[in-house]
Length: 426
Image 1 (cartoon, rainbow, N blue to C red):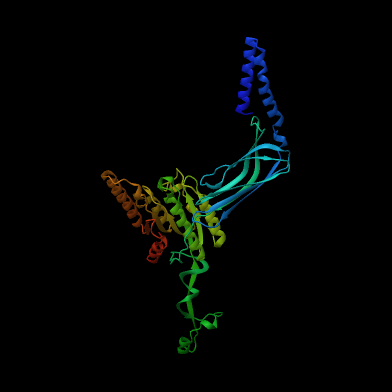
Image 2: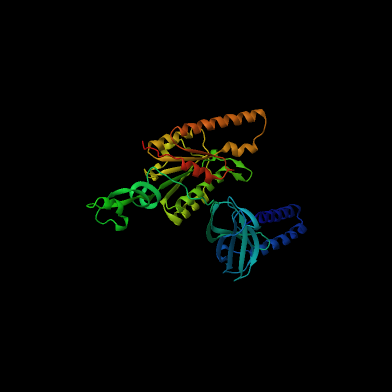
């Protein structure tokens, strides 16, 4: 029952009450049109038990354009009686920007009739899921409404954009004992010459050093090559809202997400084992894995993360470092907040090799700052505080990339990794 019905009852009651007080038959007869209107609504209303609608939903990403476009289609089939008036209401989810069609549709469905309900929206990144579509069946006058939820489940992930980095020159402190592309500083099977040792039964004859063997007639010598193994990489992404800055439609957090996605892609492409921790009010974890399957897990996780209002790097007790093995190299992507440097003594004390990629929030937001003397002084003080924070971190032998997001990240990471010295475990 809607507000229209309540209004009708009030009008009818008012006319009847006035007719009784004034003993006027004419006012009583004026109730008949309103009663007829109400009766037609009751006769043509659709009870909930007689509504039988089947629905199938599909959502797919359309090619073209810098911002992904998602097309959603809902196919309805009326398996019950005729519905003179049906309103379809699909929920608007965060991140949607409708560009074609509408989330609301008013139709009439005859018995057995089918309907295709479509709309398109743009989004840069996100995870979108639907369970039902809301529908409101009513009489032609809109007096009596029946709300129903029609099952129509679907899910789609819009993954973050990623840049395809060139292979990174990794030199981790420790490696996993699996064949890869990183020199392990151990003799074995590989491509780079390591040294020469005496022949052992079972060694390949193709690796015999015939010149040295010729000088020692009673001995054989085998060439040994440096083993090449893989690295264990842990990515940590800062998802605290207090470290995020919005400039127009862009945000600093989106640059961090794209950096994490790009690093995961190149590290997995090089054959390494990669894991991901996104921390904020709610932590998202992707445990260590390899290959394209692991990349899809990481991209799906990055598609649905949002900056949270709570959570802090200073809460080291809550940081689940146990998900990273003791020989992991950890890459942290964080704009840094006050006292965040306290995380790094803990990580170095546990023996992790650490690299910090810090998107510079001051440089990113400079364009929205005013140019008055007080604001310029505040900017200088913030820059000094940030430099002091970074200095404390570098004193722990942690390389830091102070990243201005207008610069390409790949050359900065390559340069920092190329000069990275082996960190001694503590």
